[in-house]
Image (cartoon, rainbow, N blue to C red; front, side):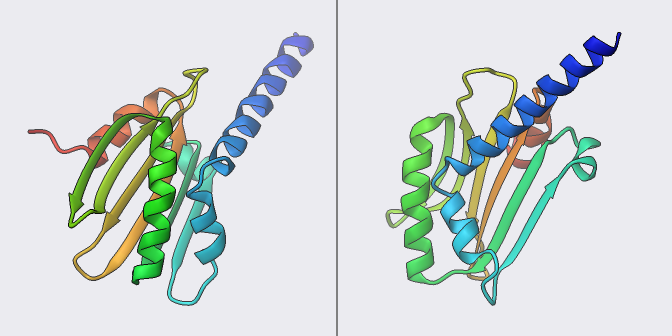
Length: 148
């Protein structure tokens, strides 16, 4: 019985560590690191119990006052990271991604990962990274995908 508990704990640690590494490998992580503590930005990072009732493992979001340099940097990051996406929904205006939803591929199929991006009418740019188990897909679809 003790062996099963230790094995389960080990598996959970491996999965959660893999998730952290997965997000760090994304190019958008540069945006969070560079602008997360900058004046005028708001960054929220949630994990653990705060997210379990929402069936998520990690939430990282940043809202920035968008200027041309920040938007260009985010655009380059999205262009790189969307190469790993298995589902892409974008709104592009004048060659700029103004809204994007990216469901990233996952070899293990245990962790669902998403990137969400939007430039608001008020001139702010919001970038969100979400990951969770298979149940997180339903939540993300309900919150962020409009039904026709």
